[in-house]
Length: 54
Image 1 (cartoon, rainbow, N blue to C red):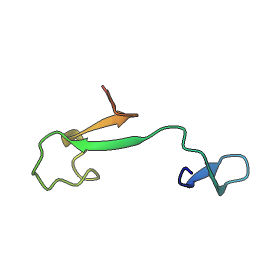
Image 2: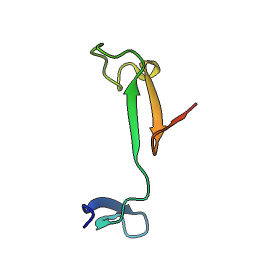
Image 3: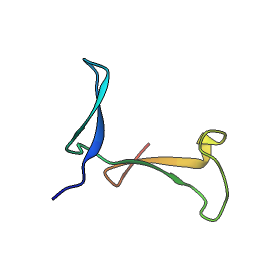
Image 4: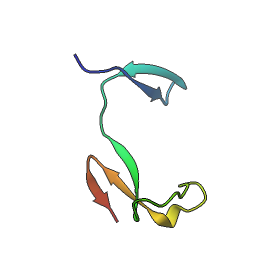
């Protein structure tokens, strides 16, 4: 059984639990560095479903 993930319902502006449609993550360009993505977005790469987005 898949884990329930909160999803935003844009029509009613509420959170509901449903199926995941994608996985998005920010990975640091340089591993071992202690950067925060909020303060250093240029030090991170965006990945959607494991594929790098340029």
